Length: 493
Image (cartoon, rainbow, N blue to C red; front, side):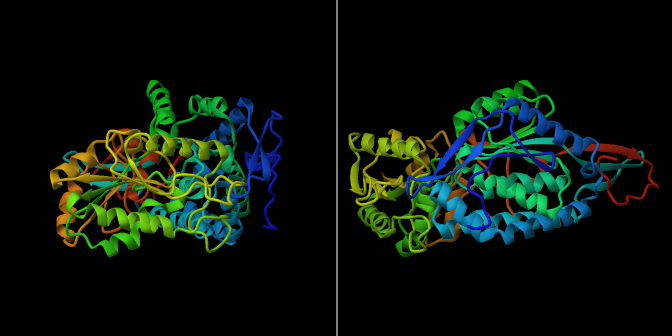
């Protein structure tokens, strides 16, 4: 960690490090130990104004607005290389901030962001931004032009992965960005600024300003912001959506989930067990895609409960920096107490506690919660309906396939899901009946080349794949003669 400073005193605005207007700061605490980790400055409304103005100038008048897609692709690759060179230190820092096990942190917050930048660099070079269509009067040049200044609001659970799901397509499209990280993981957000600066991205293309809720609201409503992209709670997403709707401002919302994992009667439970840690306990349960409702047929219900309990008991709980640990702490004290509150309520709801249910013995100093499994859960209970965001699993019985699908769909959310079966085609047929944005058959793993997002209270819009670029462009149709020949697309001339 010698290359990273745990205390930051400046904001990154307009390509330079500058003192914030306010003296307010946020003190970070290491999740595994409860000890001080560092601090970051919190931006004021004037800092947001400066960041948006810098992004506006870079888009309207600066060199970024005059770059070709090929030039942007080259800068994205340099950005990726700078992030890769900082990878081990970044993964360790994020594990300290939010408790993510070290291997999970590296994969999610280093490997995936680097791959995402390179993916969108390739897309930028593909000729995607312009095509020529014949018409009955002549021809039309259909252009995909950047939407403008983007406000990107990032949560704490997978901070670099989620930041890059927004930054990479926005930059590839030609937009400029104001990044508002969660204060809980703002230290690592400044690593993004370090890498962008080292990669030579022009001033104002990326700006980083941590802020509290009121100042963040000012960013969402700022008159010079053209697009908002947010990942976080459904409650906050609804408020942001209301503001953007009133302002006629496009918004992408990647929100919560309460996803179902349907075990069919013919499922291979060895396959189910082998994947369970990754699907239902990933990142200590701090993942929006967590398959936290496991639906089991009554004919095999006890077997499924035993498998889930066995996996929960096998997880190694401890310091996120220990390579042997597979379940680290919650990100903070308040969140840990919230998760424990759900557990205590479930104990009195009629559900049966199978394993876990409290703070692990000997780990009272950090924000730890035992991997917890409840059986005989009623799908109408809070445990089954609300996002706990911790290592807490509800196992629910069903009688037949129609009931299983009905239970899976009986949720305000619709983000992820899985079907476990020996017949993959049957699994796909069942997946088609589940109202959710993504479904896995006999595994669940996000595909960076395919659209990711949710329905219902899980959000609006999609990230990743070519569909992840479309939220950052607008269409322009230029009517030309039949003799027109399309050339190299130029944006923001």
